[in-house]
Length: 156
Image 1 (tube, rainbow, N blue to C red):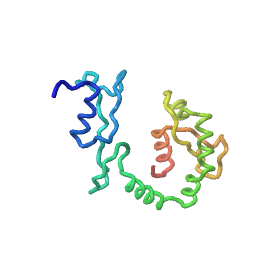
Image 2: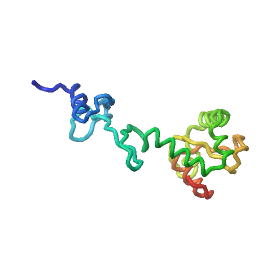
Image 3: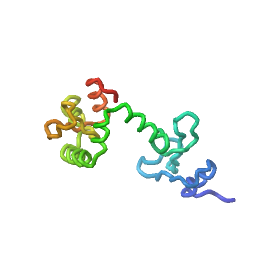
Image 4: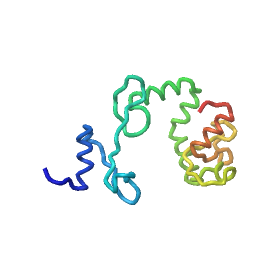
């Protein structure tokens, strides 16, 4: 059969796992290399959806598309219908995008924890979703947003 070339390693691994349609992580400066592999490509192996009994393979997240939608619907059922409608609106997406463009770093991390973290959510400081002035909006990372919501008594 001959010696296997480095560029063939990912394809061989994918075939042996039955994953020939999945991408192979590129090797480079620390990216895609794992200790013991000496620079060879490491395939992104899929994992199973964590929903009990589901055998769907996924590359990112915890749930397959079907169960992710079910989980989101169950979560939305417990929320205020006005909030669900507002946070899904184009108006909120525009407000959120504008705030994250103006303040791309987590404001809580910068002021309290003295570290730099990218903001991914926008929080209403006074909790009123109708009050969308810049002084009432705060750019936060996921960790800080979860802390803020738990302080307010919201489940997040």
